[in-house]
Length: 140
Image 1 (cartoon, rainbow, N blue to C red):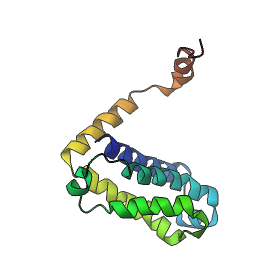
Image 2 (tube, rainbow, N blue to C red):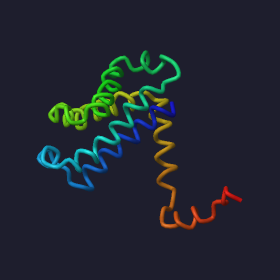
Image 3 (cartoon, helix red, strand yellow):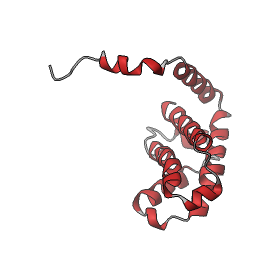
C-alpha cells in the first residue's frame, strides 16, 4: 500500500510542478530543465514499481502497465539522450493521469492516500529549520 501511495504523491508532484513552473508542451520540447523537473518524479514512480513485495499490485490493478512503467524508467535512466520526447510528454500528461485514476479507484489505496495527504497538509513547514536544528547530533 505504501508504494502505491508514494506513486500517487509523485503524480501530485508532477502536477504541482506543471502548475508552479507553468510548463507547457512547448516548454517541454524547448527546455531540458523543464523536462528534468517532470522526469524526476516519473522516474521515482518507475523505481517504486520495481519494489513490490508480491504480485498483488499486478493482479489488483491489471489495467496498469507495470512493465511499461518500469521499462520507461530504464530507458530514461540508461539512455536519456535517446528518449522520444513525444512519448515522454504523453507519459507525463496522460500516463500519470491514467495511473492516478486506476489507483484511486481502489478504496483501500484511496483511503490511505487521503490519510497521507491530510497528514502532510498538517505539517507547518515554516518551522522546518527549527525542527531540523532540534534533531540530535548523531556524531556525539
